[in-house]
Image (cartoon, rainbow, N blue to C red):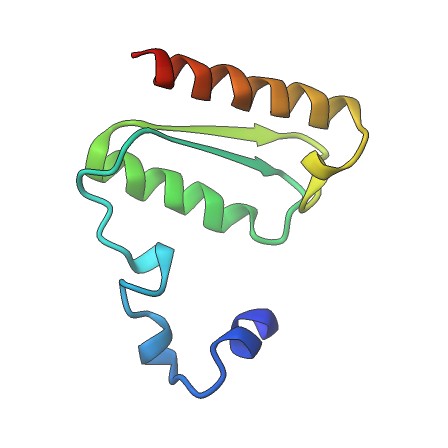
Length: 99
């Protein structure tokens, strides 16, 4: 939350919830397919779960992948779990682009 305050200095909490600025409050209707990947140890894991739920309520086209033992940013490190998750992301995006 401190990071949010830093990058939105000068805005009130209400202004931070503006649907044009805040993905958790955005209007998601009509969005293309989404793939959300989150490590279960990520402090914002629950935010990712909620975003996938909201995306599916609006469009029915979100896929959520929970990565056990994954920390925030795990996919940026030379880890087996990162290679697997990144391969899955590349595969799904490729499938969507071939449609």
